[in-house]
Amino acid sequence: YRLTPAGWAALDTASVQPAQPLAAVSLTLDKDADALWTQGLSAGLQTAGYAAVRIDSREHANKITDEQIVDLRRASIVVADLTGQSPLAFFGAGLAVGLGKPLFWTCEEGEARDKKLFVDTRQVVVTPWTRDKLDDFARRLAQRVEAVLGRPQGIG
Image (tube, rainbow, N blue to C red; front, side, top):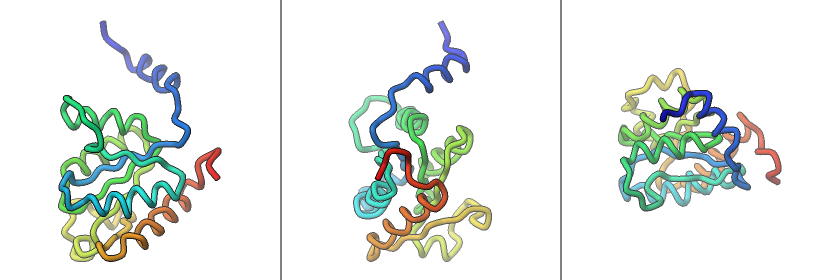
């Protein structure tokens, strides 16, 4: 048996929606990203009304890209952090565009400023961050998401 595109579409609309919309975050799996995750990305997305999910936040026995695809399909929005040129970030961003999901780009300020990115950032808005001002980054990320999409329905 094989599930057709129409079948996938039916499953997408039939799936139970979480109480809070999901934001899939694609970033490096380096442990140095933990502070960025907790103090910046997750905090900012929570403020904007989204429950953030990070690909390496749960145990699984699948290929990491398979798990990422599941998260991206379930998510309402996607955030890709380009710091360190993470292949997972580029994979997640490309899939988000293909799925028609709103995509928000972030990157460490020095890398963005020095144009060390493989993506042409003249075409997209990148929200920069610095390790010593992650609370400010969280605030700016929340403002950016809300400015583009507004608050999710049913979220204060």
